[in-house]
Structures are given as structure tokens and as C-alpha cells.
Image 1 (cartoon, rainbow, N blue to C red):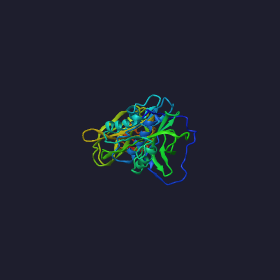
Image 2 (cartoon, helix red, strand yellow; image 1 turned 45 degrees about the vertical axis):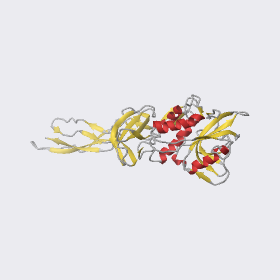
Image 3 (cartoon, rainbow, N blue to C red; image 1 turned 180 degrees about the vertical axis):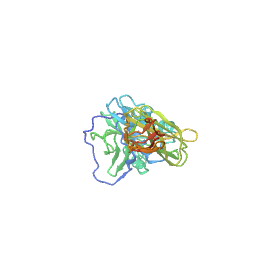
Image 4 (tube, helix red, strand yellow; image 1 turned 180 degrees about the horizontal axis):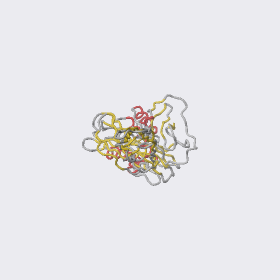
Length: 395
């Protein structure tokens, strides 16, 4: 095979694409997949998109997408929300700084990340289009395309554009999730949002005849039996600095995960710090009372790692978007009837002082000073929006 570079990204948003007209479809429900924007290259982005489907659809493969971060792509200038797996894939595929990937490396990248990095036992076949009939590559791999979709397995699909009479030019890799009986492949394309329908043997952006196509199958196996999912601060939100907040997670499957680590980031997922380690976990719902850091900011994220009995991380999840840590306000309010009137000599009288916490943070009262002859014996904390009655004695 002539080495082809999968590199298309760009400036093709305004181009027309070719939509199927009628015909029945066989489509994987792609609501389980994330439509990642082009980052570091189309091949790693497309494969990460397929990984997100497997991660979200099955309990067994929660280690494929462990957390998200905002990554600046120097080539496009975009700040994209992407999973850490995309960087793993780009490195494993040898993707260049210009976003180009030798398509021969896509298969190796899939296997390295899924099996060596994440500990699974995936299979992957790399099949290129062929003029030889009755092979998987014949007719631009159409039989293999339908076979994989019918088996419920999305895959990485590369279309290579002819540059001149013999050699191929640029190529573009996409995440294939379905097909129509009129020979359109239904994809998630890192250059566009939502499902796209591309004819099976044409370059997607200009309708020219493809020089060739390539299917890199992604066949999951060797999964684990537990998965953890972050349930709070997953899609933004606001918490108060220095205050406790509950971090909740749910463990799906069985008790193969025995403990979790909780971490936070203050820079959109690029650097992480532990909140807690080795919190007990089992199938079902759990929570941890986390004291929010004292630094305000709008780029915070959480992630959790699920670990088995040997301490191996077998699952992970994290905030999909940033949340905000706001500065706490503490407003004290005093009320009550403290008019003691006349008090008989050697007698005592009591009245009630009400202390209110009117801000958004817990109010701490360390002590109360009383005038001569008056006394009280309360100190403590008052949650935001609550109040505390204090007995004041005159004697």
C-alpha cells in the first residue's frame, strides 16, 4: 500500500456534503458517542469518538475515557473539550504536529491504547479498499462496513482523495456509526457537528471519486465488570470556596471496584490534585464530603478513578465541563428581645438572642463578649441561611 496521510481538518465548514435521499438505514444509536472537534488530527479524534461510544454504552470499558480537559490545538487555534484518550491515541499513532497520520498506524494506535494502556483485549483489523473481488476490501470495503455496523461496532473510516492520476492525496478519517442501503456511510465528523451522510466511495467534501478507503475495526473484548460514574459537578455548577460539598458517584456492575480516588483540577483538567484516596466503594451510590479549595476560579473539574482489590485503576470518569468556585460571603444578623426590665436583687433573668447567617457560607462564631453582669455559653457554626438561638443571662 502507498502510505497515505489522514490529515483533513479545516475550513471545510461551508462546503456542501452529499446527503442520502431515501432508503432504509441501519444505524448505531450515536447518542452514546461524543462528537469531538478536530484536535491533533482527524485519525486520533475519530478513534476517540468511537472509544467514547464503547465507554458510555458498556459497563465493561470505563477506562477508555477517564477524564476530559480543555486542550488548545495549535494548528486550528481551537480550545476543545477532549478526553485524555485522544492524546494517547495521537501519540500511539505517531500523528505529526500538522495533524497528519500515516493510515497504516491507525490500527496500531487502537491496539496500543485499548490493550497496553487500558488493559483490555481488543481486536482490530485494518482493511483497505481493493479491486480484487470477493474480498473484504472490494467495492471500497462496503461489505465490511455493513458487517461491522450490523454487529453493533462503530469503527474508524478513512477516505483518501486522488491527487493526480496514480497517487493518493490527502485523506480524512471519521467515526462511522451507520449506513443506508443507498450506500451512504453515516459518520460523526470532527469538522462538523451531528451525523453526516457521506457516499461510500467519494471524498466527503467535494464529491470527487475516492482513491481508496480504509476500515479500521474496533472490536471490544476483555472488559471489566465494574464502572464508576461521577454524578455531581459533571456539567458545570457553582460551589463556595472553603465550604464542604458532596461529591457523588455511582458504581455500575458488581463489586470488582473496591475503592476510588477523587481528584480536582483548577485549570480545566490539565493538572490534577488529590481530594481523597482509597475511599471504599461497591455497587451502588456513594458520596464524599469534599472541602472546596480556598481559591476562586471558573476552570475547576473533578475526576474519579475506580480501583480493583490490587489497586489497579480499571475505570474513570470526570467533569465534562468546568465548574466555578465562588468566594464565600458571611453576613451576620442579630435579633431578639433583650429588654430585661427590672430584675430583683440576687435574682436572674434570661432572654434569647438570635444570630442569623445571611451569606452563602457557613458562619463561625468563636466567642461572644457580654457586658458586665451578663453571660452566655454558646459558640459554634451556623450554616448559610440558618440561625441559632443563644440564651443570655443577667444576674
